[in-house]
Length: 300
Image 1 (cartoon, helix red, strand yellow):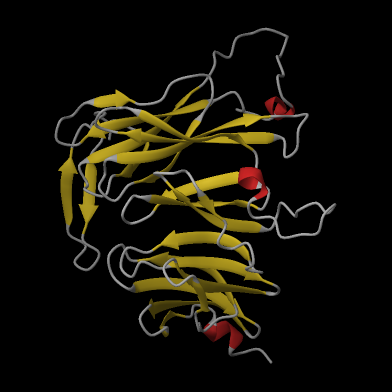
Image 2 (tube, one colour):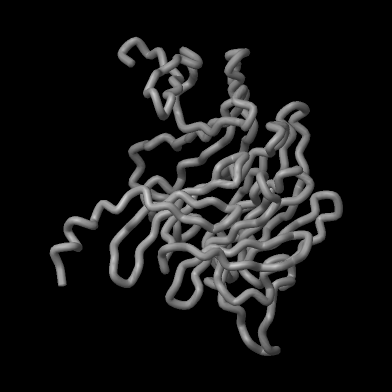
């Protein structure tokens, strides 16, 4: 507000009642830890603009506006009121996930490699928010992307392409080049660093993934030829199962944190966007919004 006092306010979704959770918090973008006691901030540092006629381009990406901005992570204790910086350096750091017990975070660092395919590499780190000790999970890997914790925090779920981690996900003939746009999912055991490319023989391409705490299953939203579907994967039985949903193309899905419920929206061959709730126990979808129905009812 005008006085500079940034307030954190919660809103009850049913009653719309508001409650001030904290005042005078730092401004900026943040994520809650699951215990709702700490905020993880992503702050930006920009270089001095200067008035020089010269521009240093260290990579082709430096031609883009704001490419020299750097992002770093900090934590802020809601009940202590102290903001502590967590990452430093001349490269941006990106928060990937926070463990369910709120003790650890996963963050990544990306570097450009203009002369080497795929022209960037990433490194992934696990940081203890209490001791600030850091563990390297991988370094300078060109084909691995984001990572999230398993519900018990003993594994991480990774999205990437087949050439990641020495080509553990490769399923092509000798002499062929893997399609980097075909995304796979991997599981890394944090105690051994072993990587399981469990979607190596799974044809659809992974769009996003979620390891559900409620039932222990991994949910995969995928591109499957002309369709966008959702599959589950059971890490114990190693079985995939396609969910029976009401739309052919699922655009987005969001899962409840601790119950077997989800919401999704998508489109079909004869309808525009519809939204549904989904009971993950029985695949039952219930329509909750069809905003284009009136307009489409008037068309042949």
